[in-house]
Image (cartoon, rainbow, N blue to C red; front, side):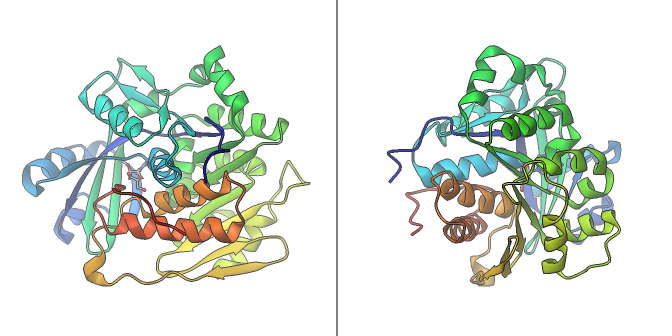
Length: 344
Ligand code: 26A
């Protein structure tokens, strides 16, 4: 099936993070002032959290980072190594080596920037029931600079790619890199896909987000992120379909290619919002005892979508593949998978 897929056709940029994941109680969330279902940047007060997770909650270390997760899932489904290229910054340490090894063994062609100035980033993953609270200490990931993309070898990789995926999370690190990729995609008529990633980005990183949006051909988000985006825009709409329609109508650079908005809503149907149509794709509900944790579910959805999209499959197939991939990841700890994928 994948014979005609070109190596390096997909390029992603993001924060490579090692997840430190554990099931915790309400108390733990309260102690650090965290919501059950959120993703935030760690502040000074969160720093003891990581040690606490390891020492008191027997935490697991799992490869993470939103874009890298999506690309790993995409590679798993494609079963054709080096279709996806990843850029991000790690430290010169053990955690960085683990991420490098995991990503490569999953088939992602990683081209990390490496810094001596900070350790590899980590993300506390606090599981309570079916919720997950993410608290990212970006560390080295925050040291990514656009220079990394401007070297001739990276430029060549970018020139060769046809699809570019960047998470909203990367707005906190390098808006100039996002602009560079977005404008390149626009100039060369390539596809640029982005994710709202977390409510705080719409709230506090509005300026770089709104600067990137005109270039976005396909926008992903979940219900909490769409709500936060609408609130930050001062929109009164609460209904997901209405919010999606307004997202569609925001200014777009490449006007001959209209924007597509894909909104996930947990176990409720996925919405595919296009210029003249809104389609709903049902999500089969998992039994409570099948759910291990929802960490990485949104990333897996995008990975499943991308695996089909880069093969020019219909949007319906892309979304069904996304739903399928998210389901596999929810049945396991973190964004992990094994065996041969059997999506059809
Ligand atoms: C800037 N922030 C907050 C982040 C992240 C992040 N990836 C990039 N930047 N916060 C959490 N994650 C990752 O999201 C995955 C689940 O969707 C976690 O590492 C986790 O693997």
